[in-house]
Length: 92
Image (cartoon, rainbow, N blue to C red; front, side):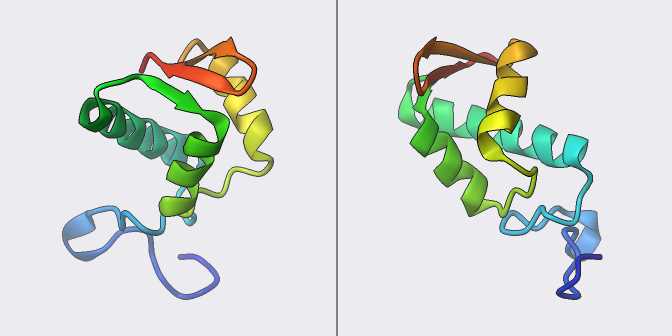
């Protein structure tokens, strides 16, 4: 449970798509990457700006500390590849 009394899991154990902040960071990361995969299919491109990544994170209430550091870690794991400064490719 988060401090606001809301759980990230709703009825039937489903993740609340607007509040993943009470999940562990690895679970938040997994969910964020799932959402990026969906977004890349919808827009027909795997390329995201840092601002777009941040908007996707805010949409699900991602709470992972410093967002830029979080993105840098995903880049180091080859999940998000930096193509240019502030431009990333989602490779899932």
